[in-house]
Length: 253
Image (cartoon, rainbow, N blue to C red; front, side):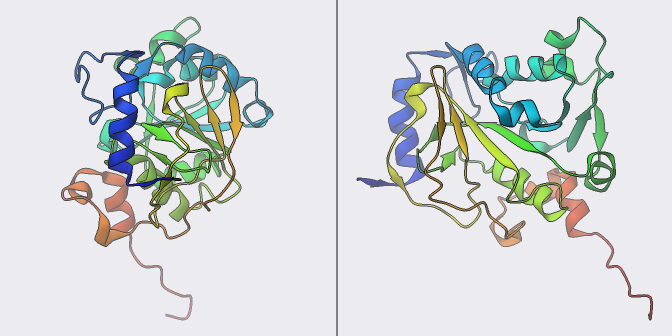
């Protein structure tokens, strides 16, 4: 099997993806800046919501990716508690609980331009108190391997979301992670894994649900501060919350 870097694999996938992708009004065809929607994304949502993992989950984290709009809508209709971020995590984490979205507005709320009418911004501490634990996480991807490795746009935001929520005890290795993409985004290549890459348990495409080979473990290292991209700490409030949290003193002090 050919061993590729994530960047090399992305280039191969993006050429195929252009045939089925739906351009974004902000980023056009620049797949390095967003996870694209594509023909068949509604079917991905339907297949995912038929899984037992989804049916049994009460708290679901869903990334703000374009291909997950229908999934977010269904999750609201199913009265799941949904945790989200915005692109770049610049506004932190948001909580949408059952009853926060008026009936009939679930479609609007699934859009990034609509959800901010209903969400409640949460610090990590507030989120921990409100929900305790996230049962499953769902992310889009540029590509996903059957071995369980996904890679996105190259910015590392989903891996950072995992690291921050892991540090606060909101997720752990029992949290089931789904990667969602088009059939053409599933590639059986040997990609070089990094310490912070968040392993995928299930792949959902427009035609199937695939249990991965679990060749990788979910990271338990938390935030690797020396590997953050320039500006991340200054722009992402939850990182600041973790970095500058006061150190608790023991009762003897």
